[in-house]
Each structure stands twice: as C-alpha cells, then as structure tokens.
Amino acid sequence: MLLLLLASAIFPALSGSVSSPAAVTAAFAQLRSLAGDWEGKDGDGNAVRTSFKQVVSNTAVLETLSMSDAEEMMTLYSIDTDGIALVHYCPMNNQPRMRAIPPDGEIKELVFLFQSAANLPDPAVGHEQKLVIQFADKDHITELWTWRMSGKDTRMVYRFVRKGGA
Image (cartoon, rainbow, N blue to C red):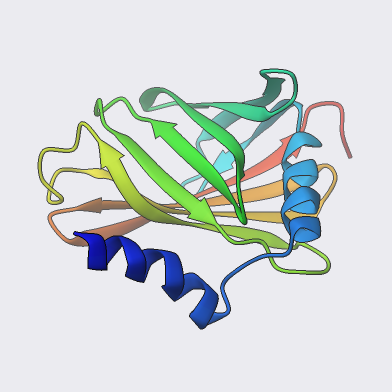
C-alpha cells in the first residue's frame, strides 16, 4: 500500500502532468465565469439545460444539469492542489470523482478523467467516466460526457448557449 501511495505521488511529476498554480487559478476562474443559466441541445437534438453557481465563498462551482429524458444531476468543481477536481452526483446513486490538469496558456478545454467513485459496488455498474468541457467563447460551451457500463463507453454531447447570451 505504501508503494502504491508513493508511486501515485511521484508519477504525475515524472509524467509532466502537473499544472502551474497560475494555470489552475486561470482554469478555475474560467469555470467560475460560467455562473448563470444555459440552454442547448444534446446530440439527438433534445433540449438540455444547465446552470452554474459559485458556492462556498466562491471556492467551488456547482453545476445542475437537466435533460429531457433523465433526472437532474449535479457536479461540484473545486481546486485540488495542481488540478481541478469534480464530484458528480448521478441519478444512479454513485458519485464519480474526476480530475483535470489544466494546461498553461489559453484554456480551450478541460479534460476530467475518472479517479474513483463513491457508492460504486463494481466498475461494470453504469457511471460517468470522463468529462470534456470545451470553451468556444463566453456564451458557448460544449460538454462531452463519457458513460461507462460493463466496460463499454457511450459518449453524450451537450451544446450550450448562455441564456441572454449571443
């Protein structure tokens, strides 16, 4: 167990996947700038809505996502040392935890990769595995979610426009 913990602490530094504090701060500021209501369509043209709200003295961002064919979901984003962490609260009653390592420079997208999950009895049980948030401009974002079940991935695409935006 000690060897595993040591390897997990050292490996990011060796692989070059550590963000600078400035990159993390900039990425989180970009997430905070999403505050407000958004509407859009999924990959099949169905209506979707999401809203972002700064919470806990602006140290976290809470997203509430609503789709026409599913129950509401929530995702909480926060800074986690050299990255951005998220916890996704799913109607499947599991809570995947993911992490993104922001790039230095302009942030066109954040890629959140699965780390672990609470209340996931088996990896074959359906859960969110990956999230990519693409920032087109201040009023347009795309979320690319990857759902994994029994080892098979399904990609879901949501394109959003800020309400009242361009």
